[in-house]
Figure 1 (cartoon, helix red, strand yellow):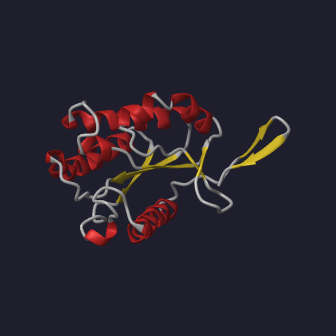
Figure 2: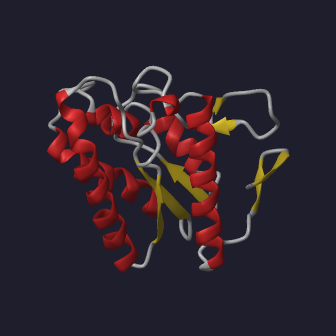
Length: 184
């Protein structure tokens, strides 16, 4: 990724706090495509929270289709990538739309199944139980340290499931100018 967070060695990502699904797909496209051009073998995608909590004007009922298009962008750009898409965390922030999160999460299962039926490697990470306990969220929307730890466990479980199912290709060494890139 083009973004860096934290002080650990492998801290690159392509995360954009506060972005909607469309903003991820459109506003970050040059950076996103640079990351995709590194041909990752696994992509983790957690998108849709801001679409559900009135942070954007687009109608939330269309969020599943917007997510499907974003997934397609990744799946079509990177042959043999394993895409792990998250059912989003449950927020407690006061919003009329937050009640739509369970419906959105159910649609993620459908969207993932449609891509699997087309031969793509897609898994779902169920992060929907995070946020049910108030201590999981620091402000009703963003995870606390405890919430992030729970998210990490759920992502790791999804990675293990994908690996056991034989869906994760070995990392590829890529040549980029004078440096050697190795996917992790």
